[in-house]
Length: 102
Figure 1 (tube, rainbow, N blue to C red):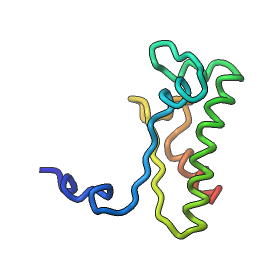
Figure 2: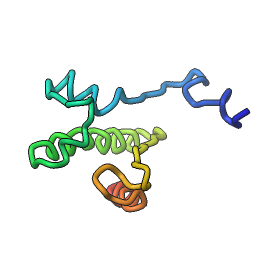
Figure 3: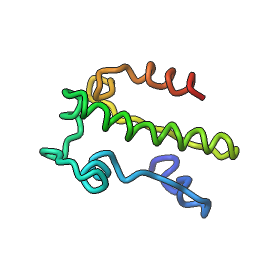
Figure 4: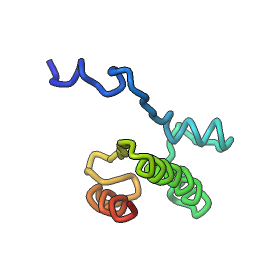
């Protein structure tokens, strides 16, 4: 059995925040059509990249607010089968960028 299956942070009774997902937010909150429910199509156009940057910016804001209050925070990424972010950026570079922003 996996080591932490019965010891997940959201099961200990403390406050736990998670996100509903890029595609859900873009479709239902921004009213933008995502063919095949895929956000990566927006990387091809400047307007789409702006939408994705704004979506990601909220996580930087969450990180800063949590840090200011002394709360732990976890930011995770979705990577492609080659281990890179959908933008083509290496995961380690994205982590370095986030850490530098803190």
